[in-house]
Amino acid sequence: MTDRKTELTANLAKVEERIATACAAAGRGRDEVTLIVVTKTYPASDVRILSGLGVRQVAENRDQDAAPKAAACADLPLTWHFVGQLQTNKVRSVVGYADVVQSVDRSRLVAALSKEAVRVGREVGCLLQVALDAGASGRGERGGVAPDGIEELADLVAAAPGLRLDGLMTVAPLTGEYAGREQAAFGRLMDLSTDLRRAHPAATMVSAGMSADLEQAVAAGATHVRVGSAVLGVRPRLG
Image 1 (tube, rainbow, N blue to C red):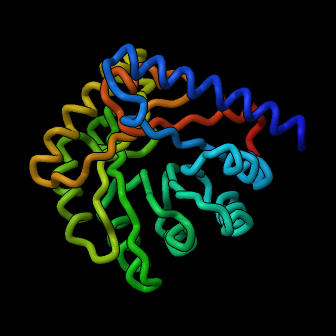
Image 2 (spheres, one colour):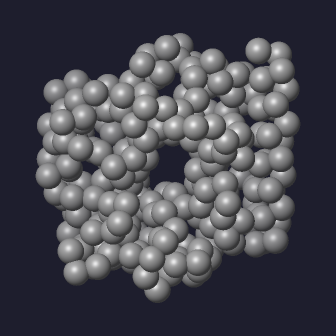
């Protein structure tokens, strides 16, 4: 455990330095960017260590891993984000622990989240996952709503009992016009965020950037970066 704490401490310090350097290069204050540590595939013991090191925001992408982990860490002062594609049959479980769902991308999911949030008396923050690689289907390779679907979906979330519209999220696409152009992709997300805030001024959160491209996200103006392997190391997927 001591060795793991030492490892996580060092990794976290390196990521903090990267974020601070990127903020300085972009003329932004360090307090303008929030680090979310993606703890998927890692045990609750790592989450506990990270909490002790000052991490307050953690993210998961698979409910079957996240639910028991969140329960094991229920005593910690953490905000839990769900960042994976979410099926409606998992909504009841996810609403039990997730403070923010970053992968809202369709009306049916909005309805399911709202119904469950009201049932348990919680308010769940929602980010619309934007697919910058959306094709004719209107959805991206890894989920998400096409840019031209944001307005309608945002209005649905904003009007849904138990839900709070917090902003937008994207993953740098692997195909399409933004493939290999992470900063351009994140810049496009910022433009979409500006449009969104005209109708929904409180939806200020912009979640973009991961271990490999957090600098580009910060340069573009992201408010939150989601970092996993740079903090926790590379580990085989569970299951």
